[in-house]
Structure formats: C-alpha cells, structure tokens
Length: 354
Image (cartoon, rainbow, N blue to C red; front, side, top):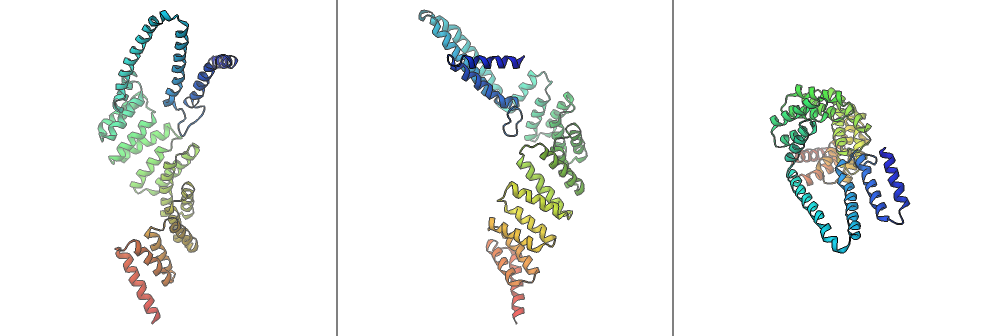
C-alpha cells in the first residue's frame, strides 16, 4: 500500500511540475533524504541512518510553511489578523514543547533515562547505554546492573553481553568475561568483537594458540562485513602478526604486515616489522631491503639504524655496521648500548688492521 501511495504522489508531482514546481522539489527532497534513513543507500558504516531523520522532516516543515503562506494569501486582508491568532497559539505551544524536549538533551544520562521511562522499561538499549555512561565514570557496579537489566529484557542483546565481558575482563574475572563473550558469539555469530575481546583475554593468560585462533576468526568476520572498519582491522592485524612471529609462522606474519602496508603505505614500522621477520627467517637480503624502506619513509627512528648495524656486524661487515651505529647515536646520543656497540666495533676494526 505504501508503495502505491509513493508512486501515486510521484506521478502527481511529475504531472503538475509546470504549475507547482515547489511541490515536486519538496517531495523529491523528502524522498531522497529518506534513502539513507531506510538503509536503501548506505552512508559510511551506518546501515540505517535513522539519526538523520531530521533532514527528511525539513521538507515537511517547508511544505507546511509554504502551504500556510498559500492559505494566508487566499484570505481577505481584513480577516488575516484573525487567521494569525490560531497560528500564533500553535507556535507558542510548539515552542513550549521544544523547550521541554531540549531539557532531555542536557546530557546523555538524562536522555537515556527519558527513553527508559517512555519505553516503560522494555527497551534494552536504554539500560545498555546507561550502563556505558556509568562505565565511563568508573562505576562498574552500576554499569553491571544496567547491562544485566538489559539482558533481563532481552537475553540475546549482544551489546550488553559484550560490555559485561569487558567489565569482568577489566576486573580480571576472566572466566565470567569469557562466559559472556561466548554467549555473544552464540547469539551473534557474525559479530567479530567477541572473538577479538576473547583473544585479548587469552593473550593475558598467555594462551597464545587460543588467542591466535580467535583473532583469525575475528578478522574473517570483519572482512565478511564488506564495511571499512580500518581502526579495528589494524588492531587485529598487528596482534595477529605479532602472535604469528612468536609461533614462528613467518609467512603469515609477513602477509599480515603487508596488509597493514596496503592500509597505510607510509607506515614505516610495518616495513621494519617485516624486515625483522625476514631476518629471523634468515632472509637477510630481503630483510635489509624492508628496513631500508622503513628508513626511507622515516629517517628519524634510531632503532632502524641499530638493527641494520647488528645485521652487518653479524655478517662481519664491520665498517658498514659502524656507520649505522653512528647514525643511531646521532638520534640517541645518550644511549649506553649504542655507545658500547660503537666502542666494541671500533676496537675490532683497529685490531683487524694491526
């Protein structure tokens, strides 16, 4: 039925376009501004941008204003003053309602308390957001109560399951945290955040295999969304690549760091990390190449020069090693380890020339 109504209004606007262009403009603006709200057109990583509904209502207010002007012009001049009285009364009433509504937006807590009250305590999102506010001010007890209340209303409410896992994780009650994260995975198997948070717990518990498995699952779920979550993708890749290095899965680690370079080609540290991995895998020439690229991007990081110094020292190319140690010393003039290396290499060179 709604489709028929929309098509009917569209055809009417097209047919009367020459006589009433303003109606067509108002309607098509209304229709176009509804597209992101309904999720027909996606903007960013918001699937249904209902927060932008106010843009759509602008066209309605413009239409009402234009209609009132049209009606006002049809009224005889001597009666226009009387016509203004109900209009002024309506404006005063709406202004009073607006003033009351503005008070709701004084702060986030007041807003969500209002939503909770009008929702007759049946909206889990209201309790969840109150919990988030309490968590921000470090009132974990109150936050936990709110999250659990949200779950009483809807036991499968994933945001509260994840948040409860986070609260218990911060309190180092890892068994409870894992319980809530696993529930979140059960109820929202496509959500990558529970797996990511589980991985963080397993890292703290030094269960690196379980951490790596959960990070792989999190990354797979994140990529399946086909929505850019750049910050989270970077976090997952950094952790996963680091764990792969520890497990000596060098190729997987290199692949992860290469993906980080795709996301940010000017990140010198990604080149440096690949260089370290390749050196650990005895691919010296390739490793030196990536570290040299890191220096090209960021010539002001002393650790790049120091690592190359160690590489050339191990290869018995002492003159080259000394050059890199001295470059590192320029950036770190008070570093004892760098100074010790320079003294040691200098002595070795002098002994070799005797």
